[in-house]
Image 1 (tube, rainbow, N blue to C red):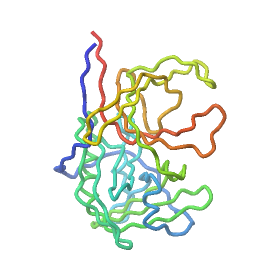
Image 2: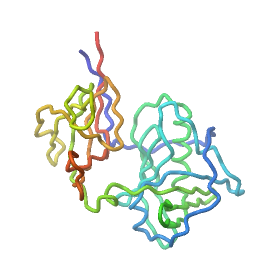
Image 3: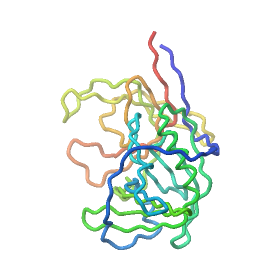
Length: 274
């Protein structure tokens, strides 16, 4: 059995960016939430997914929406530790940001360096990397009842994005997470799940690292009866994952006491059979 390692540590490099068009679709949402305006903390409380985009002339712009062959979802922004992180592109892109009232200042984007076989997605990534540092104004309108909050971002050239918010795990669970690392084996395994017949468990082991990044501990392989939010297992590929583990407030019967949320894929290994 041979392995080819593809590293996804947050190596960063400035992007040389060019404007490119893409095709796809996103449904128009003519009305926004009816709740009060949000403050700067509301930026960090939600995952923001792009729902509408407009050209500088005010017409709806579909070029920010594509049907990705890799199964990526809508463009998503997360505001974490004074950085805005862009997900669902080929790479994870990020930039520093600061808020001054309703103004937002975004630094040059940085990115991981994973290869991408989806040309449309790579073109969209380049387009996002070019426009993001030109953001100039933001506004959050909170929802009422079942309404999702809405983030509006406006850019220097007049382009406008409208993004709907989904609560982050920390917002949902009301406490800071514990950071852990799990290695996930390349294949699921049969296991005796108390609620699901013929369940296939992930097989995992805990990894620990010292402050210098050197591995200090590798635990035994164990069946993992839960799922990891944000992680989609691909058979034949093993991964080391950085996980945010949250303590559940109200634990359902026969459920885990923890919620596991993917923070980052640290490394991947593709299993090759002779």
